[in-house]
Image (cartoon, rainbow, N blue to C red; front, side, top):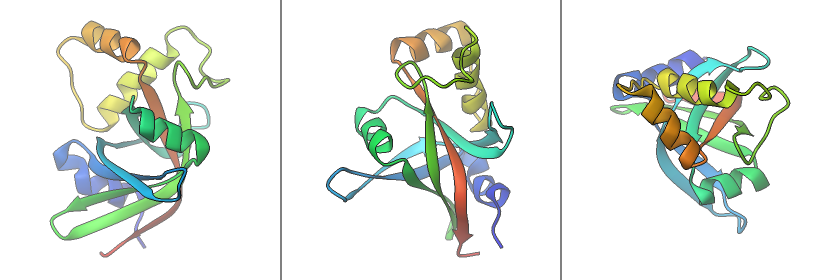
Length: 147
């Protein structure tokens, strides 16, 4: 049986690079490459995947249809995590995101969970706020692989 740790671990050496597939309004699939990491949900503590985005298309798709698939790979080995997205950002408020610095810190946590580092966190914070970045948390409903 493949676990969430197994799936995310495949991409750890490559800063969590994974393909995220969302559903467009017309029923077709939209896919993109993002950095994804495993972390504890900031409210419930449950294990989730997280990534940061500002893509209008991806966010519109997830607001309308929160189901998505995240596929990790290393060589010919792959694992897919299906789940439901929870958006948290300036345009997607959450009841657990009320503390003034909580979104800023969550953006950092997700970035670091995906293997990211930064030399100037103040600059990182500025860019995230300027671009109105949103955190996408994925609660897994199914994990499977070819391994």
